[in-house]
Amino acid sequence: MGLTIGVDIGGTKIAAGVVDEDGSILETCKVPTPATPEAVVDAIADAVRKVSTGHEVDAVGIGAAGYVDDKRATVLFAPNINWRHEALKDKVEQRVGLSVIVENDANAAAWGEYKFGAGQGHDDVVCITLGTGLGGGIIIGGKLHRGRFGVAGEFGHVRMVPDGLLCGCGSQGCWEQYASGRALVRYAKQRAAATPENAELLLSLGDGNPDTIEGKHISEAARGGDPVAIDSFRELARWAGAGLADLASLFDPSAFIVGGGVSDEGELVLDPIRKSFRRWLVGGQYRPHAQVLAAQLGGKAGLVGAADLARQG
Image 1 (tube, one colour):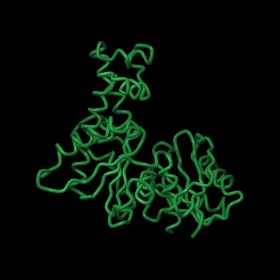
Image 2: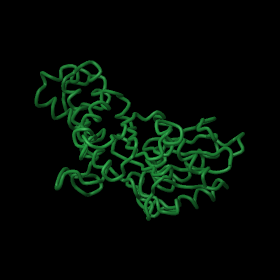
Image 3: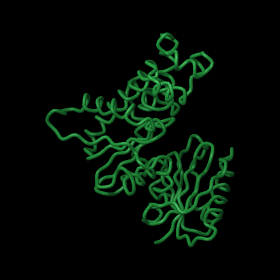
Image 4: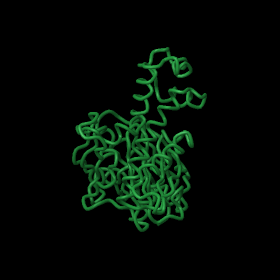
């Protein structure tokens, strides 16, 4: 199979790209993400038609946030788009006339990193994406592990704290409530309110009110040496590393790949994640340690991974 199209469905935009066998993106287009579930299907089809013009395309891979069934055809549950048992594969195929596979977006990103990014040279890889929430993907023996029903790798909703913080999924104490972009902002707001004298730079980037702090303010302030911003990243990293230590006990990969918007801060967050991982790894002084690597493909990982998974058939 030659050229395929990858589609990445985001909260504000849908990106589609023509991808070759080497993972290179030849052409892309973006369209706004509509408000209604059926309109999203139409927008996906529009993006596929636009980007495929002038290219001989064999198949389409779609990365969707949510639970995708084992046949890679139906989105069982997507809270942000309000899809419930959405027959996405059939609907898009009817509109574009190409073979379509549907994959969880974090799985697609993990596959992209495994094939073309930081995971090259590893056969056993676990990826986590630290974005607004926390997603993940598992590669075992060079194969994407999806589980019997297609919904493996939902690490963000592993309960880290019994009766902990309420999660948007309806449970309490989920990992993403402690290691995610949302968690980072919460940490910074709480710390800036408690010790404003240690958050002068952070507060100066907004209007001086801790309640208006945003992720971009925390990143800029941390790069400028703001103590509260740096400590907020360290708190997130403490939880992220502890979770990776648990995943090492489950999957024993040779590498963890950390992606998502939070990981864009590089060693500011990765170094404390590694330290926390080593701190909490059971038997760590006696066993080999997995590498903790930064993702390399950035925002392209999901699109490239979905396209390659479509190529695999």
